Length: 502
Ligand SMILES: *Cc1c(COP(=O)(O)O)cnc(C)c1O
Image 1 (spheres, rainbow, N blue to C red):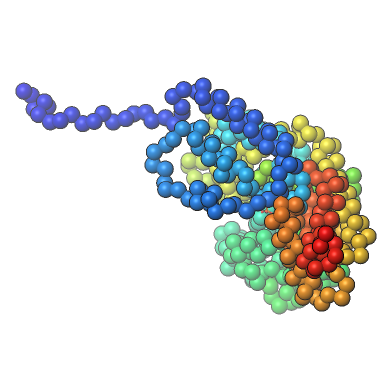
Image 2 (cartoon, helix red, strand yellow; image 1 turned 90 degrees about the horizontal axis):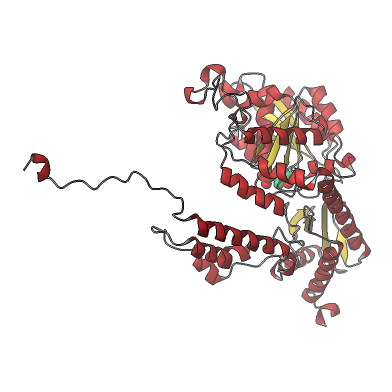
C-alpha cells in the first residue's frame, strides 16, 4: 500500500453549476404561455376593477420561508398568476389617474424581455446597446428643443434626473472646486424653487450635503406659478447675507396642479443673476410632443431639463432622462479627474473598452441596464406623432373633465385646469369647510375601494382635492363620465341625499 491509498479520497469539487435549464424545451413553452397570458392581461384590463386590496390569504401566501431548494418554474409561475398579478396598483387601467403614474405599453413590455435576455451593461463599451442609447438621446434632445451638442443620459426616474441637474448646477456655479471640497469649501449654497416644487428637491439637497435649508421656497400666484419678483428678491437678499445662490428650479408641470412656471422669465432671471436654470419637467415636458408645445414654452432654454418617460411617455418603469445644454457640464459633475480614473476602468485603444461614449461619466450609476431598448422600440413602432396624439388626448380629457365639473352645481374645481391635471371636489350647499374635506376624503376612498376609478388627493389652500392626472393612453371620454357619476352617487350616499337612496 502506498501512503496515498491510506486516506479517503476527497469529494471531487464541482466545477460546473450552471443555472441554465437542463432542457430548454419547457422554458420555451412556458415562455410562450407567459407572452400569451400577459397579452391577454393587457387586452382585458378594462374588464377588471381598477384596484383591489391584497386579501389576507394572499398576503399570507407571500410570506414564505427562504426557498433553500428550488421548484419547477411552472409552480412559481402559477403562484405569480394567483397571488401577484391580480393585486397590482392598477395604473395600467383606463380609469387610473392617481399621482403621476404611467400606463406602459405592449411593445415596451416585450422590449423589456429582450433587454433582459441580452443583459447588456451600459456603462459604455463598444456595443450596439450604447449606440441605441445614443440614438434615443439624440431623438429626445431634438424633441425637447435642445441643441445637438447637448448631453444626456437615461436614469431611473425624475428624482434621479432632477438630482443630476442640481449636481451639474452646483459644479458650474459654486465658485469653488465643489467636487474636491464638498459642501464646505465656500459659503452655504442655496437653490430657488416655488413652494409647489416636488419633494425631490429636499431629497436632492440632503443627498448633496446642502441640507433642506438650502432650498428657498418661493411663493406662487393664484395659478400656482412661481412669483418671479419674489424669487429675484430672495436671491438678492441671500447674496447680501453672504450666501451663494447656485440655481433656480422652474416647473414644467407641478405635481399638485400641473402649473407651468414662466420659464422664459426664469431664464431671464437666471441670466441676470448668473445662476443655473434647471427645469423639472417630470411629466409636463412631454407636452412638447402635443399640438400645443407652447404650454411648456421656455423649457428648451433650461441649462438642464429632467423628465420621465415612465409617466407621460407611456413606458414601463423605470426610465427618466436628464439633458444638459452643455455636454461638458454633465461630465464635469461626475467624470473622475484624469489622474483618478481607476486602472480597472481605463479605456483602451482596442477591444471592448474602445470608444469615448461612457455613460457612467454622466451620472451616478456605473452598472446600468438597457433601458434604452424599450424607448427605442416604442418610439420606432408607435412613432412620435402617435405618442403626441395620446398626450394631446390627455390634455383634452383634462379640459373635458374640467367642463363636466364646472357644469355640475354639486362639484367644484379648486385649481385652474392646467396641462393634464384636474383638482376638484364634491360640495353640497351649506356644508362647513372641515366637513367638506372629510366628505371628499371618504368619496376618494370609496372610489378606490369600489374599484371604479383611482384618482389621488392633494390639499390646496386647506381644501381637500380629488386629483386626476391623465398620463393614461387607455382612457376614453366615457371613463370620465363614469368618474363624475360615481362621485355624485357616492357623495349623495354619504350625505344621505336622495340620489343615494335609490
Ligand atoms: C414624479 C415627479 C417627480 C419624481 O419623479 P420620479 O420618477 O417619481 O422619481 C418629480 N417632479 C415631478 C413634477 C413629478 O411629477
